[in-house]
Image (tube, rainbow, N blue to C red):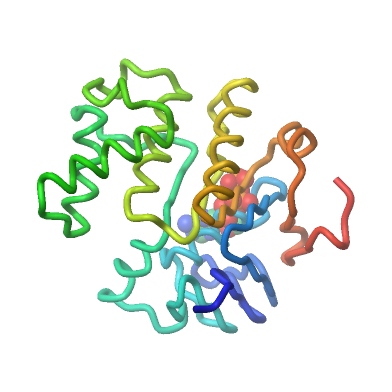
Length: 228
Ligand SMILES: Nc1ncnc2c1ncn2[C@@H]1O[C@H](COP(=O)(O)OP(=O)(O)OP(=O)(O)O)[C@@H](O)[C@H]1O
């Protein structure tokens, strides 16, 4: 199996007809933690959306978790997404369901049937994010950091090869942001899950250095070329 989870070659990233990024060349390996930075509107979200099949790849070549982005269709998009964990800034938990029901919803939607396995997997992911006590709690009774942990637990359910995180700490205070960042880095290490972490937060990058790729003037620039 290839060690590369993401491989883009001369990819064009588009929002409809508008080209957001040109000639993107990007490689991300198993277990690698990478920051994705750039000003607002520079194309971070568009790049992530292309990687999870929400925007089509029409120019260049792209492979994510073994799926060719250029030939995705209604059948293969759900299969690709099962290999990915997606974490947004807004927590997007179902507000009328408890923590465990939110997690169960995803497992059932992705084909899990056996009750004992469902329960076991929910227990495991909540333990990984340190929330095993909160399984019956409703989302609004959790703090922002706890809600984001549930979202990360949800992203982990199907043992993704990569977590795509779009400003996951955007709504959190600095201390809670650090906790979430450290949790994702620890998961990357322990489970060999790659993480692509889009952020505006230079404080985090300075405190917890890692490889950086930057969206600038319609291009992707890698860490070798820049200083933060
Ligand atoms: N749905 C859309 N339709 C058309 N253009 C869009 C759409 N979404 C974003 N764009 C445009 O694509 C460009 C890149 O936006 P994108 O959201 O990828 O940037 P970003 O770096 O993620 O910004 P932010 O940090 O604010 O989230 C911007 O010029 C934006 O106006």
